[in-house]
Amino acid sequence: MNWLRISWLLYKINVRARMQYRVSFLLTTLLASVVTVAEFLGLAVVLHAFGAIRGWNVWEIGYLYGVLMTAKYLYRGVGSAVNNFEPYLVNGQLDQLLLRPMPLLLSVLTSRTRMVGGELLQSLTVLGVCLGKLLGDGTAGWSAIPLTLLIVCTGTVIMFAVGLATAAVGFWTTRTEDLSVLTDNASTTASQLPLSLFPDWLRTLLLTVVPFGFINYVPAMFIIRSEWGWWTIPATGAVAAMSLGAALALWRVGVRRYQSTGT
Amino acid sequence: MTTMLEAKGLGKTFATTLPKAGRLKAVRTLFSRDRKIVTAVNALDMHIEQGEFVGFIGPNGAGKSTTIKMLCGILHPSAGEVRICGLSPQRDRRRVARRIGVVFGQRSQLWWDLPLKDSFDILAAMFRLEAAAKERQLAKLEEVLQLRDFWDTPVRRLSLGQRMRGDLAAALLHDPELLVLDEPTIGMDAAAKRQIRDHLRLLNDQFGKTVLLTTHDMDDIETLCKRVIVISRGELLYDGGLEKLRERIGLPTTVRVTYAGDTALAPGMRIGDGLTAASEEICVESALGREAAVSFNRERIGVMEVLRLLSAWGDIADVHVEEPEFEEIVSRIY
Image (cartoon, rainbow over all chains, first blue to last red; front, side):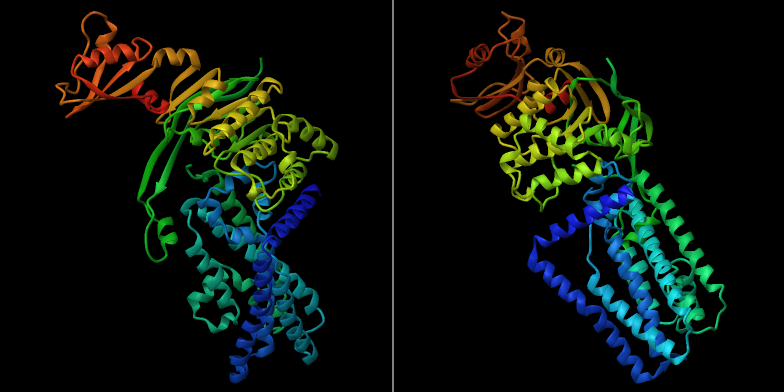
């Protein structure tokens, strides 16, 4: 499709523009390439010391972590602009994008690029190693592989939907950074661990308002733990679809309220 | 003649939520009920025919930018509607975007870190121009805007004048019928301003582009626009020929004099000698110690005549003639 070609062109352009500042580019890439693994190693050390947390061993938690982080970085790669939407509203950057003959959301998404290759590689490594171990143990069957790929996709959609809804709230509040600390950073950190560890209110929150529980925990209860039934998979898909639909609707209403900035 | 732009009863009110400070301010602001309604534009009608060059002026905060943004589809009007070539910029934003070219003087739509020519490649792809059509259009624009000299320069290193030429070319690449310019000469020196004006005139004269121009620069208006639309506080004040507006305003002028000794002039006085009616229109704006300022309409009475009358009130040591800012005059008249 033509828009796909233009998106690819814009992506390449953004990368080239980034490359203009070589040192900054190299530093960011270098830093990014160690952060995820370092973060997981920290988590793994703690888990190793305790052996298991309420029946979840290191590999299972690593699986949750791997799915979550892969979804997160896929979302960051595609939706970097949505994730950092505040400047578009504060500086009126959205004005220029509204003058392009492209669907607005596509204009927004292609206006900013974050290269996530390094982070993705690490997340996938963590995910691959943990899934491999679980397959080897016989804890999970071979169907876990396609199912994992599927939930990485639905997880990315859920991440994107929550990010988009957060950005859309900016049409009312202009500022979204505080909100995004709650919906993005805090929720992501919480979802690295099994939801069963959390108090009821937090678990409910992560299954409804910010449905990050459906990124990894809910489907994992079927895929690697076989505790819940197959229904978790269609449920996950439905949650992803509904989140996206709701976020798009909110976005559409929000755009009509866009106030731009004075000169 | 075909109608290029039509606005009927256009209005825009902003409900600004007073922002909260401190912890979780975004969340608290969202649920806050402290609102202030500001009317930026009110019941504005506008009608522009193909080929016109229209100046759109008014003091700061008059609602010019808000109006422009509604005309382009950036903002959604609270009341009324807009038609560009018969299409609504809100409902048919993407189709309207293909038929208008927009330049905001304070903002560039070029890719900051890349050579100028790259921006045209991207825009051409976005507007789905064939390579041949793009080259043809660029060749045409080259005649008017002369871009080749800084073709390969990253946009961030262009001078203000060059960047504006680049932005004009970017806005014209898809060959739009209507060009909307928001303060295209802002911040430029006199030479660059003159150059941009020449370019704009050519675009209107030879390429038949319809132009709507907002500016604070009266020279822009005088050299380019046959018709002006004046708004203030979001409402239409005047819509018509530049000549007629000038007749209505005249040439308001202020003369500041410093006398050798203290003056007996007082604010509000008229200083005519009774011989001519026009001299009665000279009004003392301020007077303090040795200094006084008078205002009058230079179309009706000359500066020398005013000075002659002023000299009757003492020996003049120093004189200073001022022409007030256009916007100030307009808002004073209405």
